[in-house]
Length: 363
Image: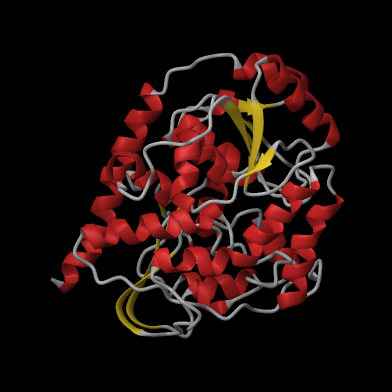
């Protein structure tokens, strides 16, 4: 998912690349051809979809200057940030490889209306020229077994999954799908943004941010309702904080931050607290050890399957905000990250071992 234009996609791609490079691998990113969507696409296709998504932000009540800043961020994302990954406008389809690693992120989320993904056989390893194919922390996202059966693609997915030499997933929903369809229990691994030690190893992260006294609101544009924004603004005012929006522009927004993905981590490290409703917004809060709350969305493009599983896996389930009127009490509570740190450290060893078993085949 290295060409999906958001920070989480970038950081998981960069993190996975670094983990493999540390093991002595020559790493390249492989592209896929998007398939037809099983659900009618919302907002059209290709450039039309991108334009529609960008200009959706104009309807929100954020300051016009911040909306324009968001549109420019989307417009320039590829040219600004793809070079950090070592990719350009030339797509890399089906190269000859020793090992093809599929994932992380929602590479198996095949029942969705996003025309940048669709129902793509290549995301399940088809049409590959690799000697071996494995997945790493792959996710079906909000695609469930019921959805696969509803759209009559479950048997096709079974055939494709059986071609893998090893299957690794990152959440319970994905694991249950794989186990039910194939009869085999997959391995579970953390997303690369957790598995790679960004804070300890990444020299690209700035040490200072020329901003202070702010909170971060991290989510796709317009995902926070008027009611939620009202409570967020009340909390910010009470604690004399500015509201910085990252990833998308919201109804409550003092400033939209347009910066490179590494600087995003620096912004998180310097924030007083974080409010998010995304998987990677939650992970960024964890690795920077911020006070945070995560909204779980069951409607629309839901995040229940992956977000609740993540927090339960890290023993941070108590950070899920059930009622918006509890926002202030949740954000003012301090909590201990030591247990989560122990889990993450153990899982990093698990990740390294998983890849070492495959890499040593080519030494």
